[in-house]
View 1: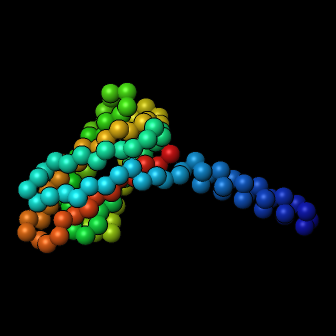
View 2: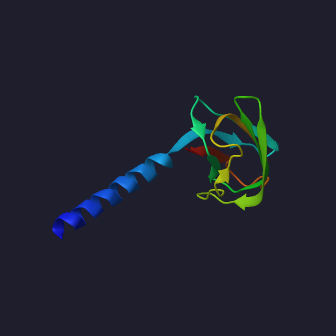
View 3: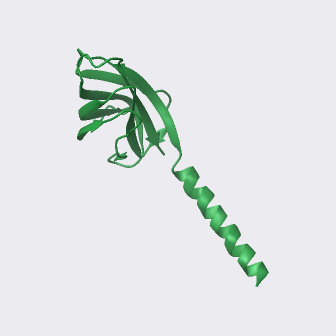
Amino acid sequence: MRRMASAVFGGVLALAAATALAQQVDFLGSRMVADLSETDVIQAQGTQRYAAVRLCVAQRAVHFRDLDIIFANGGSQDAVIRQQINPGECTRWIDLHGGTRNITRIVLRYDTLVNAGVQAQVSAYGRR
């Protein structure tokens, strides 16, 4: 009985490790967004392929309108957000169409709160 429980527990650990590797999250880049701008670009580094992206905000709230995710093969995906993200919060994971994709840049379209202090920092993350 103990041997069976040990084997089952080992299998669960192996499955959990495989799931964690399958959903590895990488930092893609960040950008300080300005009051007077409504569009900024985060340049993604490397050639890793991702299944989903998300944005996280620090220092000040940002009201996102949408994103254009540009891929290495020249394709793109428009993602409508239309949501205010407060400091310390992130968008939902945005699934990429067509399986895993190599992201070269993310074009942000947003509104910030004018004259509200420090600039917001937006960071992009990719999930494998």
